[in-house]
Amino acid sequence: MARPLRSVDSTYSLEICPRCEEGTLVTVERPYDVTVSDSVVRIPKVQAEECRRCGYRALSGREVRLFEVLFAPQYEQIADLVAALRAARYIGMFLREDQSESALAFGSRTYVATLADDLRELYLDNESSHVLDGLGCHPGAIPIDAAGRRYSLRLPKIGEGENGIVFDYEEDSGSVFKIAKPRPYSRDHLIKECEVTEFFARQGIPVPAIVDWDPYGAFVIKQRLSGRSLAVIYDELGPPDTERHRRVRETVRGFISRLIELFEKFPACKTSASPNNIFVVEEGQSCRCLLVDTGPAPLHDYSGFDFDEYWDVVVPQKIERYRAVGYI
Image (cartoon, rainbow, N blue to C red):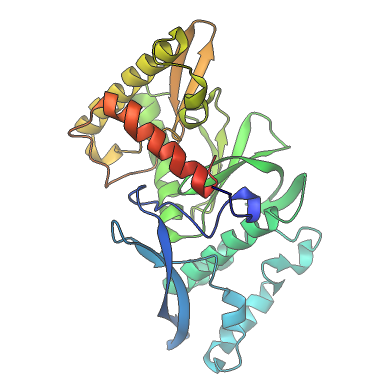
């Protein structure tokens, strides 16, 4: 299947559901109400993402164009909000007058805190969408402003999953910069990932340490991990009876068994054991695994987990799905 050409080599026209990780998101339209200065403003057509498999539904931050909506002349009730945006020195889609040399920026979190909840979600969706689209428009290292600091993100991406896209950045070779996809579910997933990472580390599960993160879940800076994802190396392992294939398979088997034991003891920490979320480190004749993303996966059911089926059926199916949508 030919991969659609979209920003940062991702396919925004085809995405895997972040909630169930099985269905593919489709686009629907619906009205959406926001409250501004005690007035309800109805946006007649806002695109949303929907999973027909699990029922997940959320606004599509990639399609909502917040500033086009807010500055529409028929919405005179939002004059106060327009004035606030201008007072914050936004002259376009997240382009700030005081830092115009960098067109990509995560806006002032002090300002974000002043927005009503429904409007804040639209703002954050558009912010992430703008940054990700901008990263797809330039080669090489792209500067962005985040949390009061400047980061030079390098293209192409080094990884992508249902909830975020990961980049190298020039200022620190020992860390990576992950941007949440523009949807509330993905930002919440990232926040919870940051909150429970130390829990996994205390349980003896190797996970990347959190260096810095956004309180609204738009981005996180994490320690760089060794190895490569199981999704990337699976097809390189050779036939099932080869030494390397057996070694990696049994290492992954033991690692997932440890995870499932932990999930049974602490159900709230249940996360995804997808091949995109497990890194494999091979050093000579030794092999070990790492967990990349500790974010919650509440719909995953491991009660009847069968590793042989996982290895022979589930992993190849997921890899095929990842390739179809451009994650690997």
